[in-house]
Amino acid sequence: MRTPVLALLVALLAPPADAQLGRVLDRAKETVEDAVRDRAPEPPPQEAADPRPVTAQPAASAAADRAPRTGPAPAADAYDLLFHAAPRAETGVAGGTGPFAVLFPTDGTYELAVVDASGATVASTSDTVTPIDRLPTFAVLRYLLLDYEPAPGDYELVLRLDGAPLTAIPYTLSRIEGDDPFNPTTTWQVDGPWATYGVLRAPTGDADGDVELTYWVRSGEVSGDRVKVRPVLFRDGQRVSAYEDGSTVFASHQGWTAHRTAINVDNGGRRGNLRRDALVDGDYRIEVGEEGRSPIRVFHFSVSGGQFVPHARSALEYEPRAGFLTPRSVADEAYGRNRFSMVDQVWMVSE
Image (cartoon, rainbow, N blue to C red; front, side, top):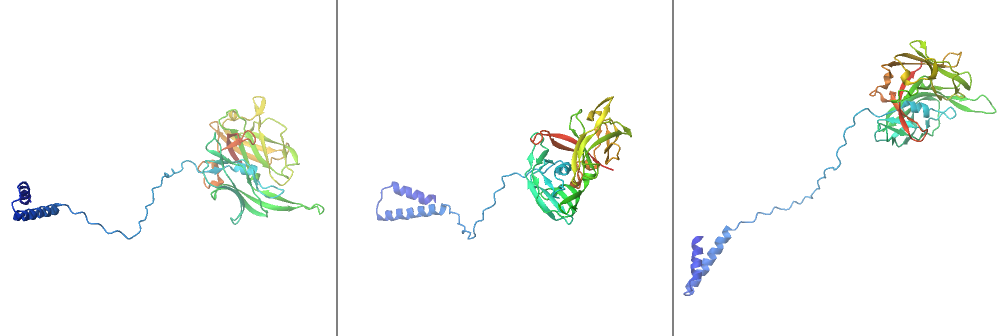
């Protein structure tokens, strides 16, 4: 390429002599243009357009995966079902306004259901769980009212979370027809664990707090509709309860009536309520009944190392969950004002 370029430059600088020189210049110019064109880079070949439609790629999820749950599985306190939701003798219908304690709560649908012997749901209702600010491992349900036509048979009263049972109370329902032709009536007899369960409750972390006993009574178990019934405490076979008249028990129908009472003991010649710090190690027995009559309940529990020995079904990982008996729960210390405090629970089964 250098020779044509030099020739062109010389020709341009020198004055033209004649027409022949003009033709030489034209040919030199053409030669330079051809050389420049040969050295210019060619544009890359254009790819043919893809006739297929373009599919948008899904964007990455902005929400991080939730961390797997750790700790004990959710549970519900059977005490609250026994206490607040027992089928009523007048109607045979279960359910109540609670509160119903939930332990280790998670998001989901909480539902109270009556299930028959075939496993079919007779009736159910749900409510939103309400957390307890000061007690993050607890929450409560309030309104679990049911509406259905009862029928004789075997049932379970079940509190469920997303269909999985958290606690269950089995019972049998029987119809009782009145014998007065001028006033025909129908009532219902409920048979179930109300006849055998007893629960000791004491404030958590309160060494001098009273120990309270809860048990259930119905008509026919005591001598009248309103009678004095008292718990008598024994340790290692020796009576430690002081004498007292007892407290009044109402048992006017076939339905179960919850009765909560302190246990009166002799503290070195001074009578008073049984307190947690007064419990020494040993095996205890509580006899519940009327003075001069056979006891209607006999409960047993033990104390070791100054602490209650929990029921075997109170282990935190106990399965099936429906049979779990919670060793701790919450009590509404302000009677309906949602001011809850923790209580320790000792479950007992009467002989």
